[in-house]
Length: 536
Image (tube, rainbow, N blue to C red):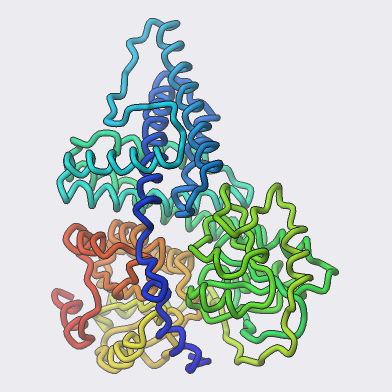
């Protein structure tokens, strides 16, 4: 990899430990319990309306909209909390009235949801925190440890599906059918006596939704922005005013580029998802999209402090960074956390004004470029070549290796790993720069959408569960749980993951993923390779 010194610094930098934000605060957790209680009950009546042929569009958007608050993990002030809860309360009352009125009119026996949560009209934040804590205790007393962990895994999956569905919606495609899946999962959480096996069954049933959404996103993005290709992407900075766009919503990046044309403002991307924007030809037509800021790691604190311009955190990208410097942080989320300015109705003028008033880059800094993206044709040829050899038993095992990040030990691990891989095995290395006779390097920065394309190429020739394949996922992020679930459903034999920072993935959930879905954490390359080859 280029920029080795910077890589080591990024790996040593642990935002979770530095700021003690390895989990959300107890107060925020309590508030989220309140919001979830409304969403779960709304989902029950939404589904009941669907059963009698009256699926309310308002309820669909209410469920999706309020979920964004859960996804963002943003603290709410009194005014924001009251506005949100009042809206949820009114929508719940409306949905129940519509349901019971229709049942009465059509002589249908209605179903009632018995909840452990009593509705009151006190919408104060302090009261919400107390009631949320009390409700959490009730749940914990009723649920077994396994049930609780499986519901937490379901919630992580639900969040990932929601984020990708919203991203697809921003590109102009309405994923209405996803609302039913989200509502079904939320509704199941109403029933605390649901057996653990049933919860797992529902998780598996919905697991492939995330994978299918990623495939739909690939198709839609290439339809709008051209076919992804390889591109030398700049990591340098140049003198001038600047805006940095963070997150995964490429449509918002495009709108920022349109709004800043001719204003002498350079635009930089940031983060693992947004860097892939440089692989789309139509986005590269904007000459002021000058490159990527920081490393491909998601060290927002370090990179945000160093960036001398304004920053747009696209939907669902806010990650506890509001105190860094106020007045230059913006978001399009439904609720902006303290110190972050909300962009409303795609009006990016405040973002532009903040960039123009900031000092910008005075000298700039030259850094080596990196090739991002891949040739689908070249990958397809290699995949078929490898599958031919697998069928002839010339290749006994196929490995997929992802991104090196977070810990320096990953580099040591994979330096040894690549040396130890037997010559009769083959490795597709995504973004880990290693090539050889039995290794193909692909500069995707381990974008999961690209992995979907890769698995699609494999499955055209042979079902995934019939291929001796092991996947090493070294890039922990908010979609790690969802990705593991759909990879297992697709039939990937062995999945190995790095030790994930607890602010990204709860260690308890990783432990239950090990027992429930049979995943492994990296241990020793020699022993791990030996385990993958058992039964190959």
